[in-house]
Image (cartoon, rainbow, N blue to C red; front, top):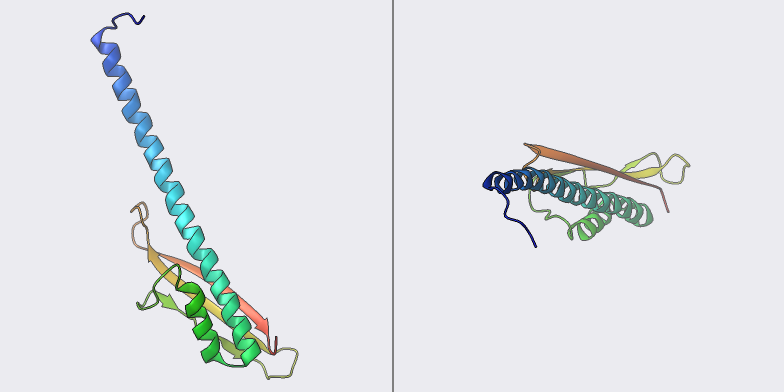
Length: 132
């Protein structure tokens, strides 16, 4: 059986809970934000690799850019100006060892929780030797 506590002790417990709850909510929001940004970066890197591979196999920057859109669309819409560099670029002469298709892409997003003010740039790169 619980004895009657003085009112001061009950008030102290409420204050302690408020302090701990703020810390836990802040931690939870930070984990959610980090997970979201990590998922975007992973999707962006996969899309860049797939775009470079498609461009190298087809020898076409248009096919590579289309492949990038197909892969990255699942995580972020591509109809705004937050994405730059999603078209593959060939360096070197086809048939030579130094020939490469490269995709260097940057996606700019805002924080979901508002912990970070402003825009957050996320970068990824994909490269593939010409002709696969």
